[in-house]
Image (cartoon, rainbow, N blue to C red; front, side, top):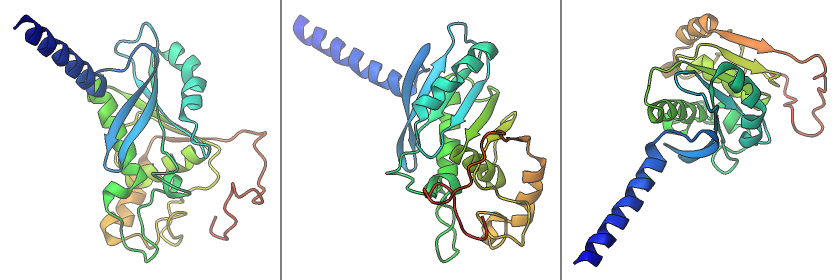
Length: 234
């Protein structure tokens, strides 16, 4: 009987630890958590300063190399200075191939709207909600930071997705979405499905706390390596 009780307790502790790992707060220092989204689980690389308590969360969106762990590491000095947590989700090539990450995968080739669960922007919102919930405060303040393809992602995310980010900072995005209906998505608001109400989104986009940073040394505009789109629209 004692053996059965001990076994039951051990199983219960293992189960509780597994549940806590999926729902509890991220550890102090460097860590990695998994967030369930409509497109499947996404890894999120985290960092918490030793003194982290009520500070904001810095959500960092990686570039084309999808090296979210490196972007987490790059942001640690800022997190230490601000007393902030870092959360850097990884949008894998297997889940969001090619431009599906940066451009959202919101519209099919025929111009019809994809189900929202297919959008990379929806997955981004799910990551935000999950991280804030795990940290015990869904209303905790947060910031968005994105570089290169991550900057493209955030520019377009801001165009069509609601958020409460205190500031959206994009650095050196290769392309932009312009607040114009005469340019087609993903470079403008033209020909978006009626469900997205282009005019409404343009107004919200113009009101967003969006900051664009451009590096003076980031001057390579070559399309030969396939890193930059060469279409007239881009």
